[in-house]
Length: 330
Image (tube, rainbow, N blue to C red; front, side):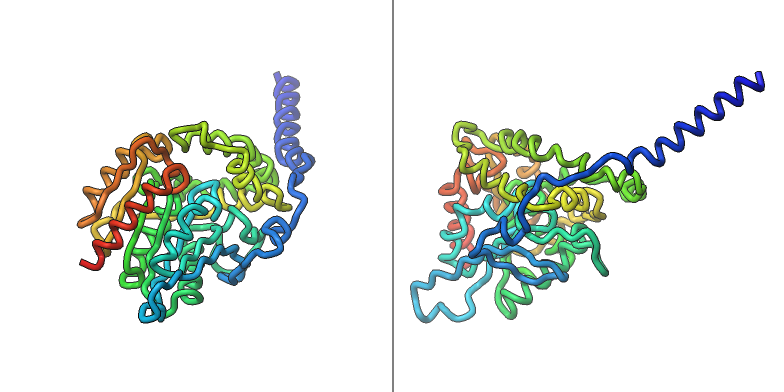
């Protein structure tokens, strides 16, 4: 009996040692071959926020009357999970009829710098994203009206910013916002992500987004025949960046403390909600429900459109925004 227990103890000890050491022996490499600047291209624009190079796509106000050219409003566009500024490419120019348009890549996505260490607030977390938005507003929209446009997870961040910063934003446009379905791990389990062995393997574990992200893109469209090779390439382009896996891992383990779904009554600014009638990523019914929870909001449901209305049905999306803009002047 004693001999059996001794053998069992040695086996368990060996398994424990293996669990502690073996993960560090597994090589974790990146598939990227370019710096974020190289991947973004020679004409890319970056703003400094929270110490990061934040990729920005700036479309200046298309002023048609000299009297209205001074201090136009500023639209700041926040993309969704797995996306980047590319997802707004069809609406930035039409939006510029109303003001300057600033689309930017949130940390962990697109061409924005992906740090593996930082001082102060975690730039991948919800609080860090709030601070980045603060600094972008200070740089591009000081003493000007600000309108936030948020899609999916970007809509959650935009709405959270509104309730956290009353008076800072004049209007809110949410496209299939993931407010009622916001994910993320419970804060009590965040310590798991700090286990050294898991932290080492983390980039490898999340690298499957390279393929699963294309599945999500497919689910996001009503008419999948519209998903061209060019569109796929636009979403895959940031995967050329050296260390993109580590950045995505940092995003996944970052603290997210969204409480906006419990504070919807605090949204007191004109709000437009847009969704496709066949959204299966953030259910159409969720956006419809939000319209009953945000006082005075306007809901537009676009026929034959999925989760990415601004891409799949940009004309109808802009028609909804045009109507919203007209209503502000009444």
